[in-house]
Amino acid sequence: MEVTMNRLVLGKSLVLVAFVASALMCGQVVASPQESAGPSLDLSSDIEGPGWEVTITVNLRIPEDVRVGKAISEITYPNKTLEFIEAIRGLSAEAVEAKVTAVTEALDGDSSILRVTIAAKEGESIPQGIVADLRFKIFEEVPADDTTVPLINQVFAWSDEIPPIPIESITGEDGAVTISSNPPVFACFFYMH
Image (cartoon, rainbow, N blue to C red; front, side):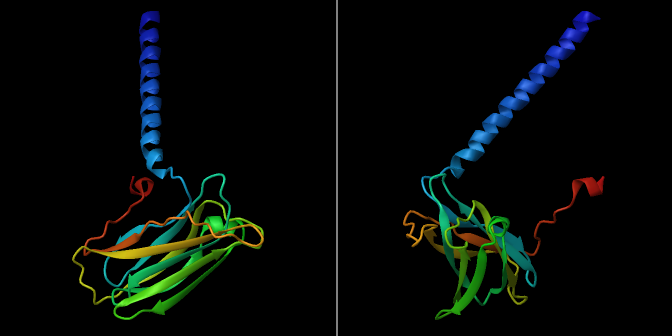
């Protein structure tokens, strides 16, 4: 009986060690691309069908030695495909009561620029994380043929110092909206069982 118990304990220990090792390896693989030399203001992507709304997040990533007091994301998007609805303050901006404003400007042709400004109070900094949620509506007339619409992201940032100093090293990843006739449906696992 004691030998069987020892094998059972040993077996559970090996499973636990294998689980922890794989979690650590996965964490390193996932964490490596996230590490960057400088700050970034990145857009997410979303997928939906014509006539529906999508949400694009604006995510601020900053190294420990950088403090951002104000950031701007200028997003060029096709105004014949998408209609901008609103910008909602994200959790990181909410934490310091940063002001989030959004202004659109039509360009020549079929594009518009959405200028999203996130500004902390003077002398304060914006913490890393989601600073804004941007809601767009896909026009109903747009064909649902799995088209990916790029959201071109040009970014600017300033320090939290008084007076603010431009942060030249900031980068920004573009976002995208995929228009599909069969967008994925997310269901709650616990509700389904």
